[in-house]
Amino acid sequence: MRNSARKHTQNTATKSRLKTLERNFLETVKAGKKEEATKALRDAVSGFDKAAKEGVIHTGTVNRKKSRLSTRLAALK
Image 1 (cartoon, rainbow, N blue to C red):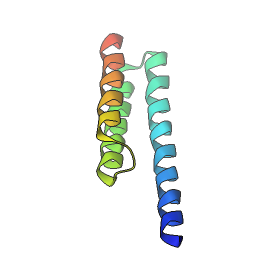
Image 2 (image 1 turned 120 degrees about the vertical axis):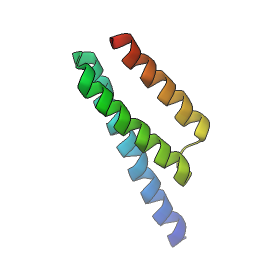
Image 3 (image 1 turned 180 degrees about the vertical axis):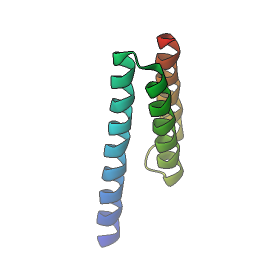
Image 4 (image 1 turned 30 degrees about the vertical axis):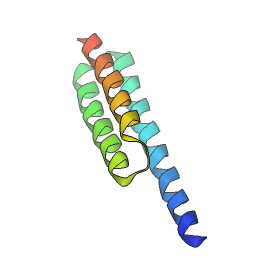
């Protein structure tokens, strides 16, 4: 029981961090700041990959999100 509670807490924190990274990226894209958006995308992709490696979210979900975010960045150029 304690093990699952600990993993639940870690997974929740990781998912919250991913949402924050994604939100930061979308805000910079909306503001039209290309260089900052590129850095934010790099941070978000790194976070998504780490979450997939840890098994917090599925690899397919990560790939889909990375694809959609990079499409947003490409549309900004």
